[in-house]
Length: 187
Image (cartoon, one colour):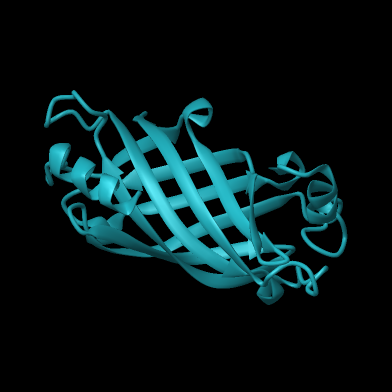
């Protein structure tokens, strides 16, 4: 998958110029996926995006900002019992904490190499620093100057115990991997 993204990046590299641009998330064409490990076997889940505000400054990526709010109640996994446990008081506690948020503090890197986005993630009311790695692409076939619609691939990971989401630790690994695909359109 990483090799495919690198090839796509070469084919659809973005020009770097201009002023900050504000983008809205296309929720129908975007997904926040996560991988957890239950007794050593990987399991997949999704969490819908409630809101997302993104400003990208292609001439100075350090001036870019992002705020994303996820809907914990809408979380799904491939197993009903895992979904129920995920939303319950021992893990995400959806009744008390219905959202997960991420607010960027800085961004560095390049469009060609990838962008490290440092920010704060809040899960179960606990806020911790987090670094996400993003790669930005134009849709295949679009003009090289067209930045009106972009696809962003984002990777990261959390340790759920850092946020008090440590239920079922005898069965579920602490580390949760994030794999996000965001389709964004200029406002």
